[in-house]
Image 1 (cartoon, rainbow over the protein chains, first blue to last red):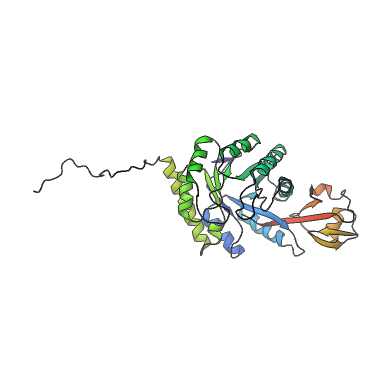
Image 2: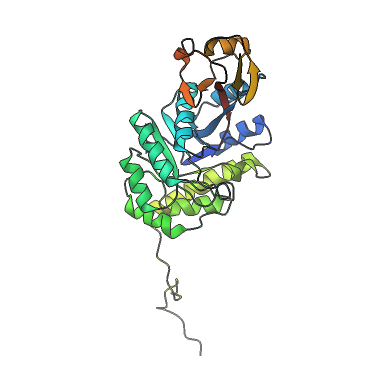
Length: 255
Length: 65
């Protein structure tokens, strides 16, 4: 798939937070085969912890997608993005403008505002949004070339709460890369997103909080691949009634 | 003078951001600064003058989702 002109092989984007150790994070990144990892910026103490983390991340040799996690206004998100661009040396930004502290849903008004400012400043914005079609259109008008609808609230692991809405997004934006970001809890959730025709999935907690993060990274990578192939192969439609798979013609008669 | 560094009241002699980073022993390339909510690029740190009560944010890479 192509994201802002970059050819990306893996359709799994992985977060770097909440792993039991830096070593396990590195193992999970490798096992997942991801080519893009998300990172953030936080206040640096005198201990230089951020510099150490940066060395670890660079050594992984994958693309960096900095986020604006925790920002609640467009202004905060814009300033954080500007700081991230300098530190990480990339125009990519995963834009989060959080609107509600309980379900961490995006403030879509602030999101569109920040997306417009950042796009005008040359950023390549990956907006964490809802599955609302009109908001998606506004984000594209603001300069985004990718949309990242949520599957369920961040860190909830609830899977895809509204598959019909994601299907509608796929139909409405046939040529826009769609990445389900947030809510994926297990391999089957990721597979389902890909079967719906999403271009990729972005997840963190599902891998980081698994009993064996590296194994889960590998498992979800397989499920993403399976779902993508299933979508490409065009699945059969569900039927209400049974239809025999084995031909009736030529059945023996025994009575 | 007293400024806020990452939310903590801090006494500094430095008159600009670059000098404040030195004085507070912040090192390395993996740092970004903002003053009173506005991003200050690396090359502007020397010329960005500090005043008492300023809020200086110094950020570095961290794990994120």
